[in-house]
Each structure stands twice: as C-alpha cells, then as structure tokens.
Length: 126
Length: 328
Image (cartoon, rainbow over all chains, first blue to last red; front, side, top):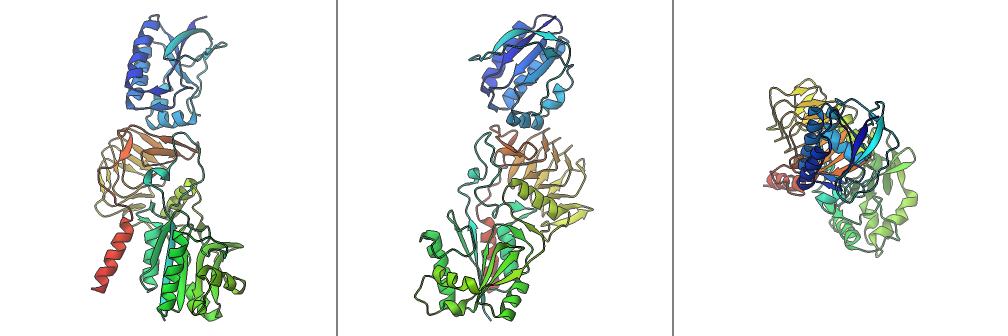
C-alpha cells in the first residue's frame, strides 16, 4: 500500500502561502508517482497567486507521474475552481482513495502522510 | 387632464452592499434591483420611459432605505424622511390641481399597461384603483387626487380611508417579483426569449444577438444566442457566449473566457480564460446560481470593475437631461 501526502491548506491561499506550499510539496514528494491530497477545508480566500500555486503543485505532481486530488472543497471554493478552470485540470489526474485519513488541523501548510488504497477521485465540485 | 406620477425605489446602501460578504448564502436580496441594468436599462429607467409615454407631468422619483413594503403606506406608518417626502410630493401635486396621481414602486417587474389602468380608473370612477395579480397586489395604484384636497389629515391617513372603496385592476400578464438574484437572472433570460415586454436596448445584429451602441465583439468570438452585449462593452478574442447570457453596459470580457447561461453586471471586468457558468458576476463578486453561493473575488485580474466610471443615478440624470432638452 502506498501512502498519500495530505496537505492542509491555510485560510488564505495567497502568493506567500503558495510559494511555501510549492517548497514543502517538493521536499515531500521525492518518490515516484506520489499521491497528494490538498485539503482545502480551511481555505476561505484564494487570489490569482494561490491559483497559480495550485497549478504549480499540479505540474509538480504530474511531472512525477503522480496523482492529485482535492478534499474539503466548499461551495465557495468550488465556484472559484470552476471559474478558473482548475476543476477541469483536476479531472486529468487518475483517482485514488485514502484509507482512513486522519486529518489534523495544522496551523500552517503542513504535509502529512496517510496510507492509500485503490483509485476513486474525490469530487471537486460541491 | 393632468396626470402625475410618483415613483418610489428602495435605495441600495452602496454598490458593494448589493452583494453580501464572502461566502454567506443570501438567496434573498435585501435591497432592490431597480437600479440594476437588465438587458441595457434599469427597471427605474424603463419605468420612467413608460411614464414619459403616458404624458404624465415629470415624475417624482423618491429613493430611500426605509421605503414602505407597499405602494400605499398604512395609516400607522411612522413619519420619516422618506414618508414625509412622499406625502409632500402628493400634496404638491394636489395643490397644483392635478386630477390623477399614479403611484408606482419599482420593485417587481410587470408588463402592466399604465394607459389601460388610467382608463379603468376613470371609467369605474373609483377613488383608488389598485393593480392585482390574482389575490396579490402589485405596487401600482392610481388615486383620484381631488379626494385628497381640503383634508387636514396626513396623506397616508386620507389614502387609507380610500382603501375600502378601491377597485381592483386585474392583471394576468407576465410578472417577475425580483425577490432574489435567481429572479433577476430569470428576467434577463425571459427578456431575451421574448417572454415579456422587457426588450434588449440595442439592435439585433444577427439572429438572437442584440448589441448596444458601441459594443465591440471580436470576430473570433463564438456566440450561441440569445445573447445581449450592452453599449460600450467589449468581448475579446476567443471568448464564447452561450446559454442565454447578457453582458451589460461598459463591461470587458477578456480573451478566451466563456460566459454561459450567465449575467455580467454593468461595468464589470471579467478576466482571461475564465468559465462563468450559470452565475451573476459583478461588483468584484460571483454569485453561482447552482450552488446558491456568493464569493468575493479579491483579485481584480479575475473579476473587477471596468475602468470606466459609472455614476449612480446615471439613467435618471440622462432622463432629466432629455426632459430639460425637450422643454427648451
């Protein structure tokens, strides 16, 4: 069983947090075909830099032939992801499911690892 | 015969308050859409134009935050700046010898023919005629001004005394109560589908595409009408407009963006390569009709205000200007 990196996204996904996300993700997904979950449940605001940060993550994961999915997507964030077409890009990734993920509230962007199972993409749209 | 008209409208507290704070679900609109452009003109401007066609005296427009919920304030309505101004307007018309006063509150949209209403009022000899749709009153009434003359009572009380004798003018045409943004979107679509008399302000440049004066649509734009692009608006290369959509006056839709089944409010910038689906965008916000959710878009590169300034009450000022020119 492979493990997934779960990233708790901060409340405001702006340029600073997007850069931090990119740095931390790079250090955590050195393995081939990483499975990454971006937990957006705390996110209340995303600007264009934050969207670019998400795209950078997607690019990084795709480069390593990995898979990425989103969780905790509120209707507000789903609306923004649809507006910026990020939801369409997310559909390009193969799905996977997380076995009993233990999400803990992290004060900042903080990746953690949880075991994963067979594929099933979480819905982006709320 | 002199006919006067008083048009009341609920004021928006500020353009920003037309939408709520981030993420709050607010299906009901607390203000009014009277000043919101729908297919190129606001309800207020459209009502003023209808009154102009009726040859009324220049109408009095009263705007306030505490406008009564009904066109006829009850006798117990407490005094305040709005109600005082409303009573003064009626008293002034009565003192000037006006015979008939048409009272309209710009709230719901209906295709009521004011001329038919006035004729009904005179033919029935009613002191007060009130428009009804089924058992629900619409905010349109006509009063015999002579009955308000020589009364020491407050106008609202004198009018209340007439209510038991009122005659109902039954209207069974199109109505949209404009209670929320879904209704606003519906009215826009009904206008484009010819379901009501609310017509786009512009020319049908091709089948099912109406454009206001000076609208610019790049030749690469794909359009599946019915659609409306308002005066002075610009739709850039590679965009797609579909699903009965309107882009109101003075907007800019940047390259590659899709506007689908949506309404872009007046003076809005919509950024590049976006998907606006079943939504109303404007005032730096997007309201998604499927999710019934509104999102504050903090980045003006996505949704912002178009640089051209839009004065409040611009429709009214242009109306007054045309009135002044007509009187010259």
